[in-house]
Image: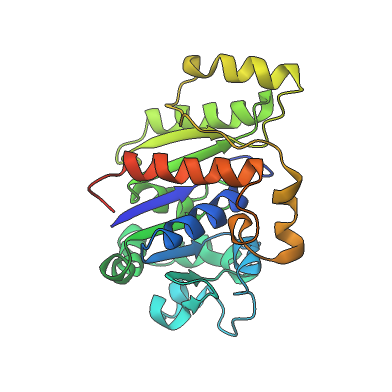
Length: 249
């Protein structure tokens, strides 16, 4: 089993879009996949129709509700969802009042590791204690970035933070999203990718109107568009990730 967190300190970089599409592609490849929405905004849950869950997500932390009781089956084979809602904004407060918060999060994840081949977390754009604990326990953190100064700066802050922290993520890698090759700054940033303080995936996601339809359709991109630029790029990216994690999936 491989656990992957999609994370960036900065919002609006394609984090949720990437989490949903990579989870869908993993499931399509025949892997039993769980997408765990850890963002109180619940955008990933909304895309996959899990926003109608009557149970508040915070109950997993505050009441010890099992992941199985929260898990929602999506319309897509091999793909299930642990939905989020605004109650998760209280996660850090709840964890602060409990001894062994890091162990508690690990205990919450354990049942999923026994059933799933791929576990993908959609993380909120913050470095709160709960997110820090979560990132420390995954096999791979993927950092989506728009090739722009602010997005790069957020990644640099993340890398600087983990340089001074013991027990950080096992592996951190970046990838570019919303790439517009008509823009000079995007071209320059891609050309200097090897100089960044983070190993980069070879594949990147171009800006594409087809991806914007995810909100209208409330569906993963490649479930309705297989040949668009972003759809093809996500398919290539999942194959790259699968090769990178060979032996764990």
